[in-house]
Amino acid sequence: MAPLDALFRCFIIVHVLANGWIVMTMIHRGGVVVDLGYPYSGVQNYSYIGVDYPVWLPIELETVEMSFSETARYSLDSSDTFDWLVLQGLGLGGHQGFIRLGPDSRLFAVAMFHELHCISNLAQAFTPQYPRNHSHHHVQHCLSYLRQLFLCGADVTLEPGDFLARNYTIDTSGITRNCRDWSMVFAEAEASAAQWTAHSLRR
Image 1 (tube, helix red, strand yellow):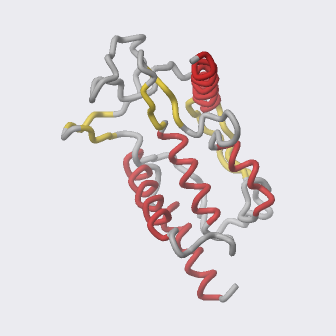
Image 2 (cartoon, helix red, strand yellow; image 1 turned 90 degrees about the vertical axis):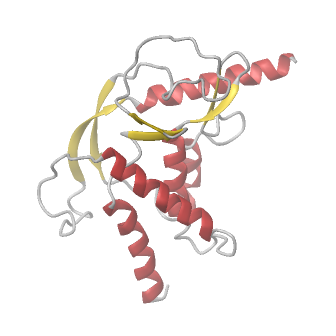
């Protein structure tokens, strides 16, 4: 890999990470800015027609701890393709990052999976086999989407030390944080996909 090419790719990653957590606090829909506090107020009646649908996936997420650490998985080579696919719910019978809601099983993308898709896409962009002739717009979309996501979240968690000076090969452990339970989102999406598959087979 040419030094300039490697430098450019590193710049892309730094550009994404440096812009911080974004689209979690505000969402724009129909000209109205809605504060995203992720409150769960129980089941409400929506028609799921037009804009009459909830802002968030209507499930109550518990809080779990995640210890941030370096991992050999999700690397920049093709050996981790399966891990990336599972993370996005791809594959035969998978939810593909979407969920169906309402009496007519309206299709919605779940933001968490959109974000994971973009991270996977950026990782693929570092590989030689990535189709560069038609991928620039996709990479640019993901950079813009994640940049706005990070800014919107405005994550002000204090991280000790200088992350630029840290040796990630030796110092593999980071801080422990309280997070929303992402496994519940996976479970909900998988249940929705299974229900839709069963419904499709009955028709």
